[in-house]
Length: 159
Ligand code: V0V
Image 1: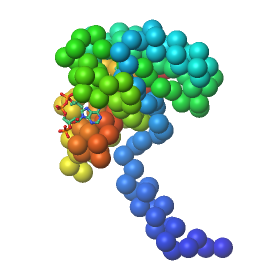
Image 2: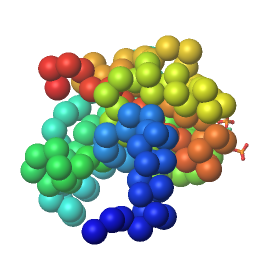
Image 3: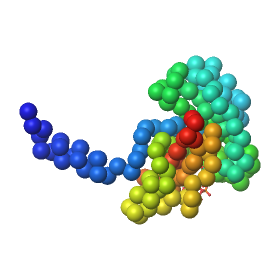
């Protein structure tokens, strides 16, 4: 049986439009107090804290919380500010605690950034910077993504 024309057209265009996104990597949540937030997500939702790290350049202390055992369950990243003038400090000041970013895993962040730039999308950094667990990260400006701060994450090779 042949596919309806509209379906095959749509799947072909989705393929050709790919910028190399693999899956949702994490959802980032701004919190004022990291330890209190970890305890809340563990105690309320039964999540597991897989990783805690301080990233001076980004001005955050962050925790990666596994929603369910293994990577398939996805993760949320709790983000607490190191300083009031950091991205998370300003976000908390303006909006209060809550969802701050949506992150996608990519295979090759340089290729993904180049493809997005070709489409006129602004990336925040000229070149990717260091993210959690030595990943390479960049961000799409929220004004170019319908009001959502989109993060691109290329995990470290050994991760
Ligand atoms: C700001 N805006 C947002 C937003 N932050 N909209 C949606 N989601 C957000 N998170 C809006 C803001 O309300 C303004 O809208 C407009 O964007 C311009 O804001 P701005 O005055 O330039 O705001 P700033 O100075 O707070 O900067 C916003 C950006 C900043 C996005 C440029 O937060 C940034 O550089 N973020 C990338 C780095 C980051 O988020 N690091 C923390 C996570 P109106 O009022 O003009 O309509 S570190 C991390 O994720 C790691 C380590 C990891 O994953 O591994």
